[in-house]
Each structure stands twice: as C-alpha cells, then as structure tokens.
Length: 193
Image 1: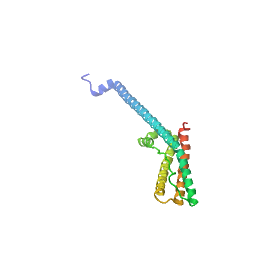
Image 2: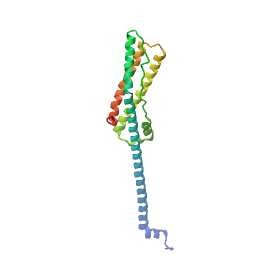
Image 3: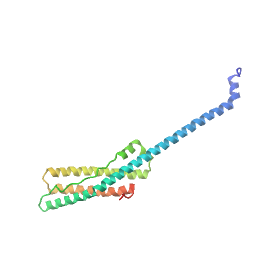
Image 4: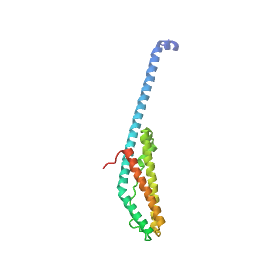
C-alpha cells in the first residue's frame, strides 16, 4: 500500500469511499429530519399550551361578564329612573347609580400572539377568538368612557343631557356585553351553569 499512488488508491478503495460518503450523508439527513420532527413536536406542544391558556382566559372573562350582568341591569334601571326624574323636573340622583364593569384580561392572547404560537393554531378558531378580543377591547374602552362620564355627572350638577348621554353609553356597553356572551359561546361553547 505504501507504494500505491493516490490514483491507484482511489481506484482500489473508490467504491468503499463512495459507500462511506453515502452513509455519512444519509446519517446527516436522518439527524436533520429527527431534529426537524422534534422541533415541530415542540412547536405543536407550545401552540397547544397557548391555546389552553387562551381558552382558560376567555372562560375567566366570560365568568367575569356573567357576574356583572345583574350589576349592569341595576345600573341601567337606576340611570333610567334618574333620567325620568330629570325629565319631570326633579333631581337626577347619583347615589343609586353604581355598578361593576367586567375587567377583561388579554395576557394569554397577547403572549400567544407575540410568541408566534397562534401561527400553529386552527385559522378559523384564531379568527373567531381575535374577534372576541377585539370586542372585549371595545367594551373596555366604552366602559372607561362611561366611568369618565359618570365622574363628570357626580362632580357637577346633574342635568338631563349628561344623564341621557350616560344612559346611552351604558346601553351601548350593555349591548356589547350581550354580543360578547354570544361570541364566547361560539368560541368556547355554552357557558357552564
């Protein structure tokens, strides 16, 4: 073997070297495929975990909305009485006008969005869920506006225009809450009793 030239060595061991090279290429391809499979499995697990967190968050938001329904009805009734009193020339009392607005969370949704987990979820479910979160954001904004309006009523003399504007805002918030209940049902199914 010592006296063999490189060309003779290649001719003598060529098929063996080609076979070795093919085994190395095959081993590398298998390792890459296994790595890709593992990564895909981990990404699917992350998406499943994110979806479970979003569902849990939506169920919590749904429960918060349900818990505040009675309060919203009482607030609308009190504001309606105040508006009627003002229309008849009386005073618009603010002491009966209290209520609790739901405080919706979007932390799980934002985390799923930022981490890219949403990209590995069912598109139709993601779209329906995104609409729920948009409606929640709108509800929070309108609730905040209603709180500011009520603050202005409480510190100033109550007048019919302010109370009717406030009543209108509450009716819009209430209508949005009712729509949200239906939207939760589409994404989560019927609420637990």
